[in-house]
Image (tube, rainbow, N blue to C red; front, top):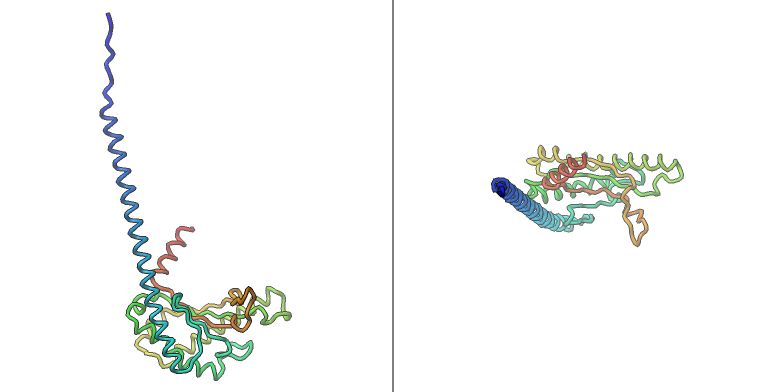
Length: 229
């Protein structure tokens, strides 16, 4: 007599695994959609920011030319570079009379170009005023470390002098409270020289830069910093 073995019913297990597979597939699709949406939104914001910064740069450049003011403007990056010769005497952080006259014209034109642009007015997070020196300043008078830090001090004090004076100029004071919360002063010593054909251009390296940080950029920086922790 033969005994029939009862075949186990695995249908319930099969249903479970099919359900889990469908769930995982759905989660992957949701993740991909969210990633794509975030990427496209971020890309659009960067493009819009770049376009508006370019518009502001063009308006600023036009205004400066009308007043015969020299400055290098990079509209794509939202950076304005001012030569130290326009602002200071050699190795000094105190504004020269020429520098004060320069800023009396430059500051209102710069601030107004930002705050009359609706997009920039709403989306600027910070305005960084950053001083730069060259690698020849104080060379031979101190050790390399001391020279670097002396230049750090000079670059920081120059940036502060520019920021302090710009706030006192005749820009539209309706934006004063907002402006005070935006301005940051930095010194970079000679860490970011201007290179021409691979060699440092000492005159162009000595400068003060004004940089814009947009709210979407600041948010991205915060996310990146959190990921690195």
